[in-house]
Image (cartoon, rainbow, N blue to C red):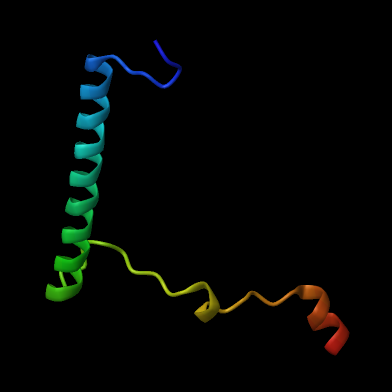
Length: 65
Protein backbone atom coordinates (compact mmCIF):
# COMPACT_ATOMS: atom_id res chain seq x y z
CA UNK A 1 0.00 0.00 0.00
CA UNK A 2 1.52 3.31 -1.09
CA UNK A 3 1.57 6.60 0.72
CA UNK A 4 -0.90 8.26 -1.66
CA UNK A 5 -3.26 5.31 -2.00
CA UNK A 6 -6.82 5.89 -0.82
CA UNK A 7 -9.50 3.38 -0.01
CA UNK A 8 -12.57 3.24 -2.24
CA UNK A 9 -14.93 4.75 0.39
CA UNK A 10 -12.45 7.60 0.90
CA UNK A 11 -12.29 8.19 -2.86
CA UNK A 12 -16.09 8.24 -3.06
CA UNK A 13 -16.31 10.74 -0.18
CA UNK A 14 -13.72 13.00 -1.81
CA UNK A 15 -15.53 12.82 -5.14
CA UNK A 16 -18.85 13.69 -3.47
CA UNK A 17 -17.21 16.60 -1.62
CA UNK A 18 -15.75 17.99 -4.85
CA UNK A 19 -19.04 17.63 -6.69
CA UNK A 20 -20.95 19.39 -3.90
CA UNK A 21 -18.33 22.14 -3.74
CA UNK A 22 -18.67 22.85 -7.47
CA UNK A 23 -22.46 22.83 -7.11
CA UNK A 24 -22.23 25.43 -4.33
CA UNK A 25 -19.92 27.58 -6.47
CA UNK A 26 -22.31 27.33 -9.42
CA UNK A 27 -25.29 28.23 -7.21
CA UNK A 28 -23.51 31.30 -5.80
CA UNK A 29 -22.48 32.38 -9.28
CA UNK A 30 -26.03 32.00 -10.59
CA UNK A 31 -27.34 33.99 -7.63
CA UNK A 32 -24.87 36.83 -8.24
CA UNK A 33 -25.65 36.89 -11.98
CA UNK A 34 -29.41 36.95 -11.34
CA UNK A 35 -28.93 39.69 -8.75
CA UNK A 36 -26.93 41.81 -11.19
CA UNK A 37 -29.14 41.11 -14.20
CA UNK A 38 -32.50 41.72 -12.58
CA UNK A 39 -31.49 44.27 -9.94
CA UNK A 40 -32.89 42.18 -7.08
CA UNK A 41 -30.45 43.64 -4.54
CA UNK A 42 -30.14 40.30 -2.77
CA UNK A 43 -26.43 40.83 -2.26
CA UNK A 44 -25.15 44.00 -0.63
CA UNK A 45 -22.87 45.81 -3.03
CA UNK A 46 -19.89 47.72 -1.67
CA UNK A 47 -17.65 50.26 -3.30
CA UNK A 48 -14.11 49.24 -4.15
CA UNK A 49 -11.58 50.13 -1.47
CA UNK A 50 -9.93 52.76 -3.68
CA UNK A 51 -13.27 54.58 -4.07
CA UNK A 52 -13.90 54.80 -0.35
CA UNK A 53 -13.00 58.02 1.37
CA UNK A 54 -10.26 57.65 3.96
CA UNK A 55 -11.00 59.20 7.36
CA UNK A 56 -8.96 62.30 8.11
CA UNK A 57 -6.31 61.97 10.78
CA UNK A 58 -6.87 64.45 13.66
CA UNK A 59 -3.13 65.15 13.88
CA UNK A 60 -2.90 66.20 10.22
CA UNK A 61 -5.80 68.62 10.76
CA UNK A 62 -4.00 70.22 13.71
CA UNK A 63 -0.81 70.67 11.70
CA UNK A 64 -2.67 72.39 8.84
CA UNK A 65 -4.46 74.79 11.24
